[in-house]
Length: 120
Image 1: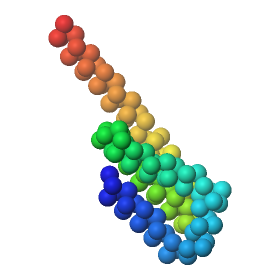
Image 2 (image 1 turned 45 degrees about the horizontal axis):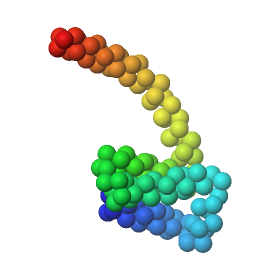
Image 3 (image 1 turned 60 degrees about the vertical axis):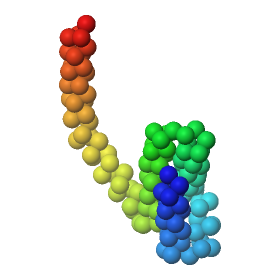
């Protein structure tokens, strides 16, 4: 988790090459990037706390995934129309995959119900 966090911080630093260091500092507090920046900072802190203090690998993995997603969302804010495009693609993918998710979920519930009833 430490190396992932360090690597993600280096990735965040690499976005400085896109806009420059002064603009990067100013743009972190921009309205369209503030949410992603705050969520990224929180996920970095929670990743390290979950490993060092709580000693929970499950939470560390969850916060590490959140960390990567927040960093990606932050970096996409520098590419014109990237967030909007990702949002549209995500909504179409969710629209297509929702029936599949429901069918798999229902099949698993039926399967688990059969397994539980056969054990009794």
